[in-house]
Image (cartoon, rainbow, N blue to C red; front, side, top):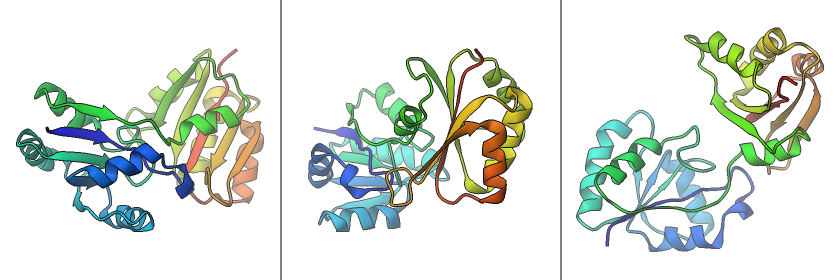
Length: 223
C-alpha cells in the first residue's frame, strides 16, 4: 500500500535519530532527499541501502508530479532533509499537501528539530511562543520585524552565520537593546553554544566573535 513517511534526521549528533526512523528508512522503497550526498552519509553510517532521489526547493514543483504518480502506483517513500524535520523551513509542505489532496496516506514521525532545544535552552518563557523561521531577506523584512517586536510572547528565528549581526542590529532597532535573547548555534554538536544576554550585548559579542554553524535566535516577548 502506498504511503509517504516524513522522517526527521539528526541536526548534528547522529545519535538523535529514533529507532523508528531507522526502521522506516530501511523498509521504504525510495527515499526523497534534500541533498543526496548528505543523506548518503547518514544512510552509510547506519548501513542502510536504498534508492535515493533528489527532492529540494529548486526542483520540488517539477518532481512532485512524478512522486505523486509513483505513490499512487503503490510505492512507499520517505522524505528527509539535510537535518531536522521536513516542512520546518525545509521542503515538505508542497508534497504533503498534494498527498492529502490525492488521498495518499502520510505519516509524520517525531524527531529532531532545531528550534525546540534552542527555545528550552534559552531560559525564556516557552509556555507560548511564535516560530517565525527565516526572515525575508528584503521585501517585507521590516514589516515582519515590526510585527515580531510587539508580540507578548517569545519568538524564534532561524539565521545563517553571515546574516547574524545584521539581524541582531535590526532586532535592537525594533525591540530595544535591553530585550533579552539567546543565540544558539551548532546544537547537539561538539561546539554547541548558547549565548544568553541582552540584544545589545549579543550584538557586541558576535561582532567581535563571528559565528559559524547553524543558528537559532530566541527573543523574549514584549512584556
